[in-house]
Length: 367
Image (cartoon, rainbow, N blue to C red; front, side):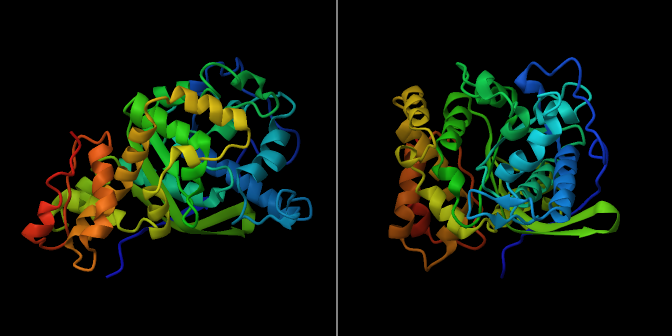
């Protein structure tokens, strides 16, 4: 049976402030605290919708100089493209952040988003929509994304002791959601994403959740209406309100509902996450990696194990129940559980598990 995956249909209009003519001014006074620069899902969707309309209307200009000058499409548009062609242009008159341009008042961060700038933003939106659905987040809930929270006209203010203000925003949030591209899981290989995992998992013990969308189709209709269709799977840090509701009509209850939907997480991304390796992470600026590793002294092994264990736990019940998965294949996952900072493990196998296979878990929980 195919694992359950939730589909998302997002209808996006092109509302103000993105109207033809001069951009409006930024919020006054400015949002001096980075923790007040979250954006709601509706605001993020409005940014994307407006950018898509401009991209389609002026496709000659929207070309990727980082990738052989290839044509940028709504499906391939990422944060590098949004920053180059949209964010900087709409915020240049006031030299402000995109959050200050969009917001009418301070918008404290609800969830921190860890991501690779090269991930298609349409897939990011599908992930955010599914995350919002699972947690029953209201319309005022915000996501902190650095491309919109930092002033792209003056990045000098991010070279401070908090390192790019990530620390302050993450610490103020309820948790971290990592957007993982389904094909290569690049977020697991970038040093800044690794640093955000360290802040979340090791330093502050925040919920650390993983989201991935295997596809997102974008179409533009009459009246500047943008249609995004996709599906995403989220590995959550616990049972969500949506799981609790589904558990009322699902055999096995809310925990079973959670684990069943998490089986849809892309296998290639899972495999890459199970090999999470801090020391192998890459950085565009070599000194960034040096500074980050210095802050993580003595914690590298624990972080490697905890991220890998978070991922392994999502499939552990199914793997234990699958007679085709032998102990050798589970050994590494069990080892990461022992070395991780996870303190509680609850699994719900989809079928009966033999006593022998249950015994494999006897030494797995961390000390």
